[in-house]
Image 1 (tube, rainbow, N blue to C red):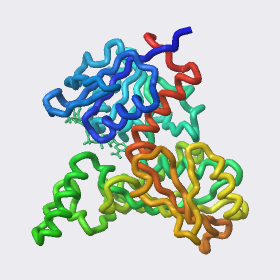
Image 2: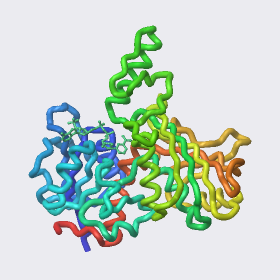
Image 3: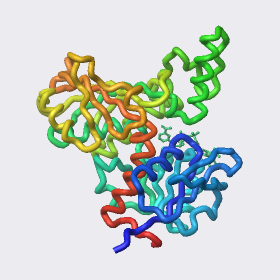
Amino acid sequence: MAMKQYRVAIVGVTGIVGQEIVKILEQRNFPLSDLHLLATDGTGGKKLYFKHRELPVTETGHDSFNGMDIAFFSAGGNISRHLVPIAIRAGAVVIDNTDIWRMEGEVPLIIPEVNPEDMASHKGIIATPTCTTTQLLVTLAPLHRVNPITRIIVVTFQSVSGAGAAAIEELTTQVRHVLDGQRAVPRVFPHQIAFNLLPEIDVFLDTGYTREERKIMDETRKILHAPELPVSATCVRVPTFIGHGEAVHVEFTHPFPPDEARQILSHSPGVKVLDDPTVNLYPQPWSVAGTDEVYVGRIHRDAAFKHGLTLWIVADNIRKGAALNAVQIAEEMIKRGWLAPGG
Ligand SMILES: NC(=O)c1ccc[n+]([C@@H]2O[C@H](COP(=O)([O-])OP(=O)(O)OC[C@H]3O[C@@H](n4cnc5c(N)ncnc54)[C@H](OP(=O)(O)O)[C@@H]3O)[C@@H](O)[C@H]2O)c1
């Protein structure tokens, strides 16, 4: 029997996440019959290739989704807010990378390794979590299953690529300017990011947390089905290009020997343990960039929690943090027979 083929649209295809989705669909040989590339308009001059063929990029509009089976959205919240309902009406299943729909009650928020069964109730749209939530929960969910988590404290070290293509350009330019003895002018970030740290990602809320921090806290509770779980996050922008790090302090219901956690994580899907202090082995953003797994190291007993562990988690925020997770959602839907082509 011939394999089913899907017609796929990508909105925001010229952005960092959009371009990575194209690459991943090719690398994983996604079963597609048609690829529709959409951005602000086709005049950006970027050439996009799929399987050695140059494909046109066209303007995103109300008619862009006719005949599409799957639409990946990563063009910012405003575009998703306006066009996702139109794509769904046109018959596409939407996989959304923005933060607009994630906390809506009816919208499944999915990490395929963690809560794939939540997709069953979808109403045409499935959301991918914030990049930092995804790498946190790919690692913590397998531990939570055997020894329920009672508290999480996380501090993130987030690369500039998390803020889009313009932010990568800003760090590059500022590093050059500072080394040349010139002034670094901030545009994307509120202050100079070169040779600096900014504990401000997204806007500040009345609680004192930023919106990025609240996203991790709310999304973690939603994905783990633990509405009361105490989670506290501090998010810091750091002058690296790709890969987010997280220092995580977790409290469990029962004691959790670090060796047992290491053993469980070494058999968990999507996780790679890199943990040997005797040879300076632990995950680093620089070396995990461009790869698919979530990496964990520095696993040891936490001195401040009774049944606690400390972990250091790193992943490529563009791949598992966004593009790869979105493609894996589509693959999981297909595997479970929940995505009919031409439906
Ligand atoms: N970067 C990450 O790590 C990450 C992780 C998770 C989620 N996300 C989310 O994914 C989205 C995109 O992020 P990014 O980092 O890829 O940003 P980016 O590099 O700035 O790319 C933005 C994309 O959106 C397109 N776009 C902008 N305005 C548009 C419009 N009016 N109509 C159609 N397309 C439009 C741009 O097209 P043109 O080039 O034609 O202007 C471009 O393709 C954001 O919502 C972000 O929150 C990003």
